[in-house]
Length: 95
Image 1: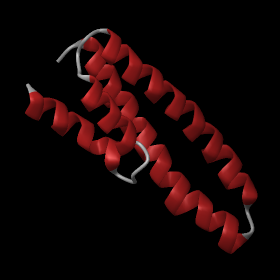
Image 2: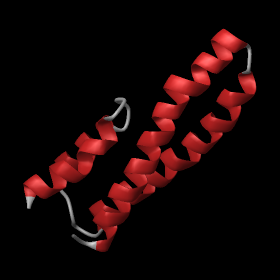
Image 3: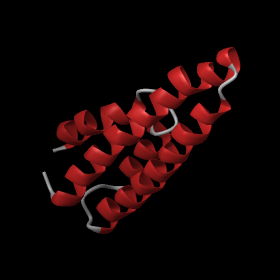
């Protein structure tokens, strides 16, 4: 697997984990326990990781390692909980 694709998978996993922590830990802490700081901290980390994911996605596309259709699909997957964990499987199936 090309370096830019490996980076995309790694950042995708990190972004996916941060999204799950935000949805299933930080948001309940905010709304059930009155701890809005959890969303601020985890949300900030998730935002940084999402931007890194988009840059990794663009980098892989610019290195001609994936099609525009795959790039759009991976971007859509980043909005679905557990979605970014399917990127590696999709890349391996396409090879």
